[in-house]
Image 1 (cartoon, one colour):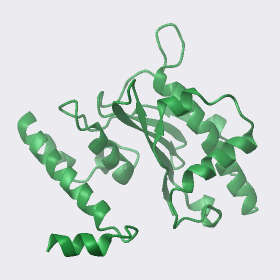
Image 2 (cartoon, helix red, strand yellow; image 1 turned 120 degrees about the vertical axis):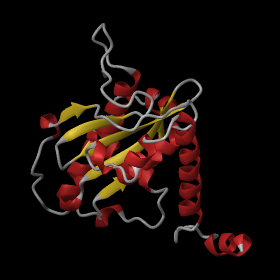
Image 3 (cartoon, rainbow, N blue to C red; image 1 turned 60 degrees about the horizontal axis):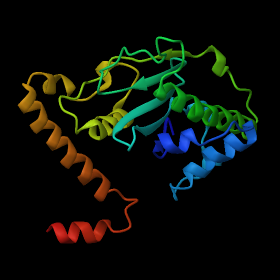
Length: 213
């Protein structure tokens, strides 16, 4: 496994979390992975991991999806936001962390604890320190409306490779006007829905295929 994508985190869960020990943070992360019934977290080879990623939703009520990334290849913490397309500040003018930075920090505490314990489990010395990683808000494709942040977030989780060029077919999407882009994004919605419904982990896959014919 090179890309570990964790279940959705939301602002309200993050906001209510008090400071915790590394042990508790580790088990909170493991508990999130229980949603993936086919995954044995102890079997994950930490030396093969290139990315740990999660979708996150913020707002009151939750209204916008973004993506948090720990990039082990480039030693970066990356924040992907299709609403701005990248380059935004994670600190407010008064020096306080932004809402997204506050959420990222809580999640990151769990990730660090999990990765540290994983290396210990495999009896391998961890070849890096999280304190040396840099923060980045890299350039990403930008949504043209207020409704498709979830679609973009799912594409980020699937295709992000550390740079804009990693997105398959996105150069073709940029050639269309706004209306054409929205139409293409609707095609992406259909493709994502099809991929989820027909995935081998869907216990009702055969029924879905039968109903579709």
